[in-house]
Length: 420
Picture 1 (cartoon, rainbow, N blue to C red):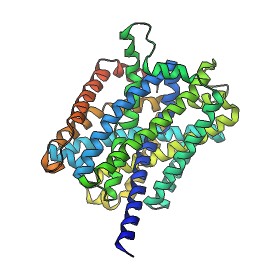
Picture 2: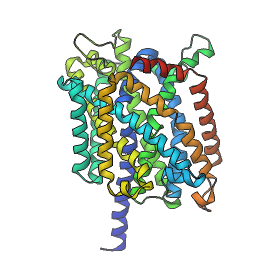
Picture 3: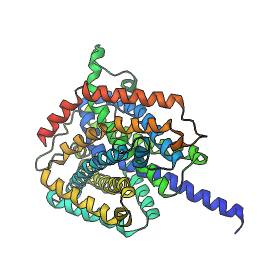
């Protein structure tokens, strides 16, 4: 085989891995929490929901670009970067990410059970464990390359089904586009504070906790790192967030059409509370309800795998035992998450709570990365982190702290936890 052919094959393989990393990040974000939160906040805020999506997207881009560039250039995992910045910082980061990953996975198991219930009327108590077994089977049955393809295929299925329902519900696209730029706050600028909690919940659900590291760590596993791959890494990071945002917009419009038509997302008689599934029921009848069950199950299973995979990837560099038996620890995390979900119950509320809880980890994570970006012993002597990205990152940290501490976010979480 000639060198040109070898290079072509290598480039094609690298492109597949980069796209796979983007999908792992995106599909990890498009979990049951993503679907449930979108339904709930669309019902609460109507066309103004577009503004929430826009702001969370802009903040998410700033987070994603900072994190992926530093990890990609350094060739180091997030926890190793933390320990390089300050001894022990990586351990703290690891603990926060794993706790966040557990929180996400508990919600993912609950969402998968809701999907099985909507699709096949499986009682949620049984659904938790069926989802657990399915996720483990998908994870252990094939190689990582096949897992990438499974994630891609399931992601495309989700997007196509939601697009179909969106066209059926015929949402007011013009009004939604206008309110995305100019939200209706009753003429009082202070009224914008009602959007703080959903913005932070979305930010935590798309780039919070383990999610922002999921695709970046996948690239390191595939030996794609260094300044020479920076452009491709950056493109992959934006692709991941774009895929997740596209799905958010389409889902928002599909549900908006239902809400504008005057339908409530409260559960119908004999149905388990599931606001997103109710939107599909009103938009496309019982067939839509069953299809959404499939979407929720797909989202849950892919997110269970993504959360467990990335969370354990944080721990394994600190332990040769975990590194050697990585698969068993991932399986163990899935089983433990399922057991906790069984004990806690009430998956719809849990799915909203976990998104915001992971946003609380975000300022710490981003600060660690920004400090690392100025360290030559981490990013190398030739790489210079863009000043605008550093400034953007600092602004995001300030916004997150403001929204969490002052914007009423913590009180919202307390209220939700009381309802779990």
